[in-house]
Image 1: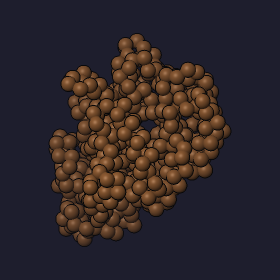
Image 2 (image 1 turned 30 degrees about the vertical axis):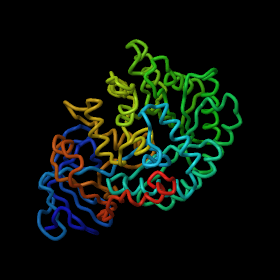
Image 3 (image 1 turned 135 degrees about the vertical axis):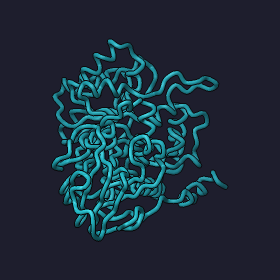
Image 4 (image 1 turned 60 degrees about the vertical axis):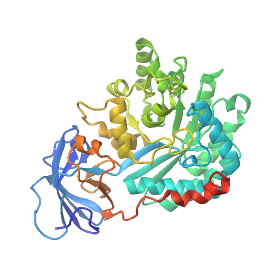
Length: 443
């Protein structure tokens, strides 16, 4: 019998694993779609799951047998909102006071000083190595796209996407402030063309600017003309007067845009009165938007004032939107940069913290969908399920239930990709020292 943690490849028979039934696809005699944890056996051949059945129904002896003793099995995870191009600049460009305004200023200064193709490539590669070892198979990254950075970062993104094909499915969404369109409306045509050429997603940060409706319509029309999906950064503030989420929903309905629309953050919604929030969430559901909350970064950033304890958690109304049928997810967001000083692109950590911050428990139910099936659907990819005929992209744990897993999210795990063990280890931060030394930060 194979021991947990031993290297495995080729044929493998996993026995006595615990799986959330909502993540099971195509198994007889296993109730799918609920949040129940069920015991299963599964067989892997040629990189795919070929048999899946309730515990005890498959052969229990022979070679290549791995008894998990009730350990949990999850599919590889989907991280739908990251910033790989910003990641890991903290040692050379920390946030002096932890505020959002200082984060913007610090990242802007670092971009001007250091973001060459070599610098961006090295930091993106480092981040993807972390995600891969932790068990993530799909990543969408936002890419700062103000000229001249767009001419540097988008070619690097395309190179890295090709290099990582087969290990991580990588998507890119452009990022610029919508207020740029007030003085430079022609920029939209330029960036939309670059995104189309790169096979990316059209995105922007939305603010309460003059003629907001007109600019939103222009973005959606540019996306429609080029067959692009859209991903917005929305209302990342505690100001209840920030209402661009509703404006986006109305723009989608007004223009008839039929592509996928994702809205991230949406923090101010939780600061508005019940009646106004309800009306907005109804429009979001009607327009078919997808919502991603970034609980670790936003709890770190929002409502931060020196010498004052924060009064709220910085997250949006995920429970209420989900109850309306709106797809919702959680994701990593920034890692080790001025927007968030921590993080490692580990979605088990993200989901654990999201459960505590957003109270996704009692019951836990099928909230694991927020890092699996729900973001997969929003991104238009096949991922986040375990089933016959699907790739054997799995994460195996010693912990046996949600309490054990979320009490030790950094505990032992064994990652399989196409049925083979991921043998790489987490990259050492020292790999990035040369980038920090060049900046003078570590001299």
